[in-house]
Length: 411
Ligand code: COA
Image (cartoon, rainbow, N blue to C red; front, side):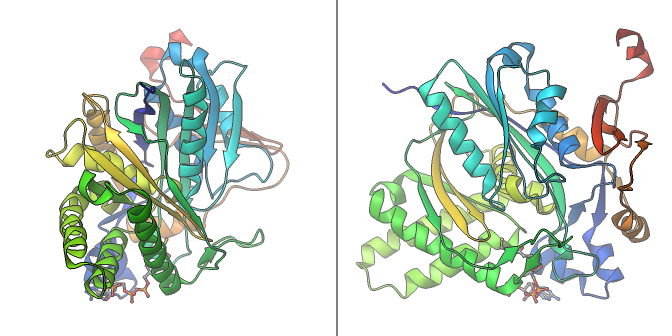
């Protein structure tokens, strides 16, 4: 029998402050129902100007890496589309902060929101060949479209860390997946732009069409698909998006000239997907878009809130990155998957968050770090035990862990 490989541990981190979407809508003179129902967002995670993709990534990974892991992790892969450096990979800072052994590979992957899946698949393939080794994959992003822009309601920030191993405790990933590439301009960011260029309507249509094309291919290549997979997870730029993709596919199927029994079977599967979908969007509704990690945030949310799921259930995952690259891949839930996730820590993270007024949010948004030579030191704006950007010394970033006074002597 082939060794199972997949997600052994998974965790996420969000910045300690957020904006309420109803308050944001009121400030923008928009009916709040557009944001809360039309787009499907209740709260939006916001970074302080001192929090970057590295602080998010370290804090996501820290709780799931044991001392023993440090010696057998061979790769640290970061997926992001909000890097602050064109050359040096964010994973190198992560490698140092987590004290991973020197003889590990560290690099960064880019392809919009799809990059997390490219990283995950690279990790899974690596461990399949070397089942005693482990790979750390971290998606980390700060999604920004500009104050009062049409994309403002679909911003967010956060990182998801996944430890990929043999005999995983949470989700075994199947070897076969189906990828898809189509050169388009739905969302992209030239080097000289602070915010991405986005054709919002076109990007939602392209997402829907890409999902439909992939589903038809999945049906061709995987004859058991419509029977065996109870759940369909989606990349979630905002929580209405997956629902739109299901609706669009339902319309397509309703007009299909295929055998009626085949179409009926697919439509029944779509009904089931819609039920599970409600559980998968809980975290995203209160965080927003975290780009590369959105699909995986949906996975954690599903495993927390969907009590109907059990060991052996099969999940299909739809990853989408503008530009565009997509992939449908598949996993099977493992024995004890729920106990392997730090749900209490996640709950406490939400409870510790502070709500920003719209004025505070706008002020923070427009603040940035000076880019001149010299030394800038920062106070931590995170909670005890978390990592923060401590200093920039001649354009070199240094990160530190915030420790309580009781722990000072241990340093
Ligand atoms: N009550 C309830 N719903 C309302 C409403 C109200 N008062 N006012 C509007 N809506 C609904 C609209 O009917 C629409 O729903 P539908 O898409 O199901 O038809 C939804 O709210 C959004 O309204 P719309 O006018 O389309 O919003 P917009 O033009 O401001 O753009 C995005 C929305 C998501 C396209 C925009 O935020 C964006 O560009 N985001 C970034 C790109 C992105 O995330 N793309 C996704 C693919 S990765």
